[in-house]
Length: 187
Image (tube, rainbow, N blue to C red; front, side, top):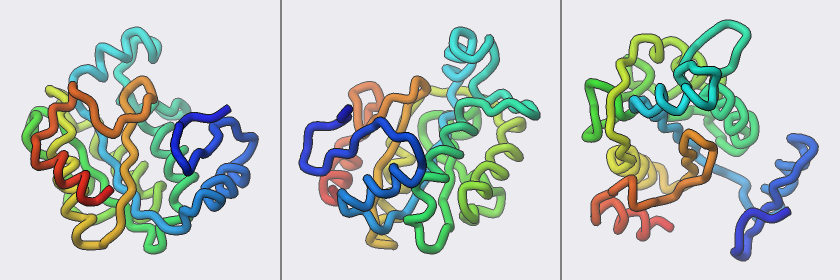
């Protein structure tokens, strides 16, 4: 099964993490800088009503991984090995304090997380304190990613919506013309 129509296609049917790493290596990825963006919009409550046993998609409970914890773990375990310093920037957006205008670092001191386990720890620590709001706007996160890319010279764009679909850009995210131009320059 194939999930894209370009020169560097990676199949999306794997039996092990080693198979995924081999496929990634075959298409030429040997280094990557991870950046996580966590959507704290109110839509996580609505979506959870029908897809997560009536709970918010951010509901934290011992012994139960919520969808965000699952994605952090899966993406982290898969791509962390390609991140040489294992320092991962993690930002939240769409909460009551940032709305659709800004992002906030998940670590209170603004430092990057050490590995995907550090991302999970920061997520688990701050999420119960976050007041969800909205609307969803990826533009502030894209601006920060571009700033990091300019600083490091590395680029990987990977975003998922609440249903697990891959997003690079869509009309509903309404990025400004400048963010689209910045992305094109670095693609």
